[in-house]
Amino acid sequence: MKKSLIGFGVAGVVAVALLAGCGSGNDMAGMQHGSTTTPPSSTAEQDGHNEQDVKFAQDMIGHHQQALDMAAMVPGKSTNPKVTDLAKRIAAAQDPEIKTMTEWLTEWGAAPASTSMPGMDHGSGHGSMPGMMTAEEMAKLNGATGAEFDRMWLDMMIKHHQGAVEMAKTEQEKGASADAKKLAQDIIAAQQAEITEMQALLK
Image (cartoon, rainbow, N blue to C red; front, top):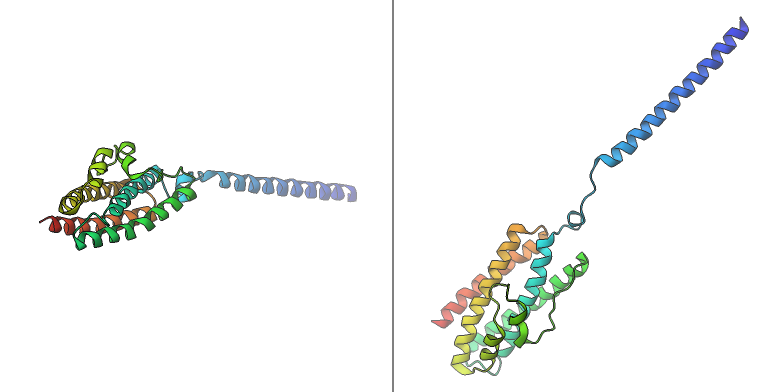
């Protein structure tokens, strides 16, 4: 009788151990299953940006660089203090934006936009961007002086700004980066105001 009880006790312990083992195995399986049910985030989602953000930064850097080249022509050519002041403000606003967007591209592991092209060559490399001046237009502007230069510069910069606003609106619609979309909004607000100012100067 004692042997039977002992045998029953041993069998019970083994059964409990087996059940415990199965339970822990199920727990582990459940944990492993849980760890794989959530799909991994894409790189874009993790970094908070998408392809549109990269394109916006790359293109806007080149776009801004041409605006800086146009602004750099003003001293010594313009006879209008208001045009000279506006050119200084455009350069002061857009140069830091170029640096910010360049930093984004580095963080995103994207190729930086080329900003090393001389001003006369910008138009040939960015024909697909709205508002960009051709190399011929830049050369013609560089050859003008006085009132003719002021009129031509204002006409071209209005067109240039309108192109930047169009690009910024596309970024707001299709971009994913909160920072890039905020910059796009800032560009729209600032350049729309400058377009109004330049249209008044032309009159």
